[in-house]
Length: 91
Image (cartoon, rainbow, N blue to C red; front, side, top):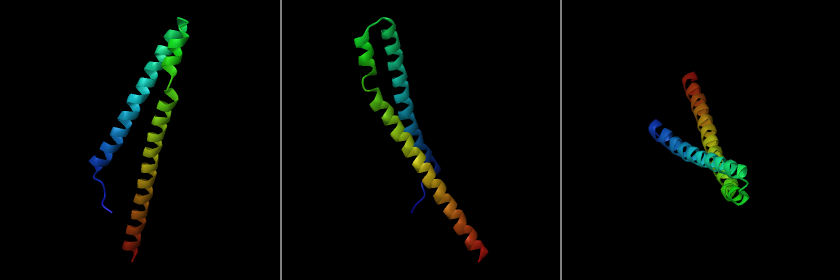
C-alpha cells in the first residue's frame, strides 16, 4: 500500500473541511433570516428558511465523521508501523 503524500492528505482534509464550513455558514445565514422573519411575524418565510436545514446538518455530520474515521485509521496504521519497526530493531 502506498502512502499518500502529506500535501495530498492535507488537501483532501481541507476540501472536506471547506465544504463543511460553507454549509455551516449557509445554515447560519438561514437561521438569521428565520429570526428576522419571526420578529416580523412572517411565519411562512420562517418555515421556508428552516426547510431543509436538517439535511444540511446531517451532510456536515457525515463528512466530519468520515474525517474522524480517516484520522483514527491513520493513527492505528502509524502505531502498527512503529510496532513493526521496533520489532525489527529488536531482532
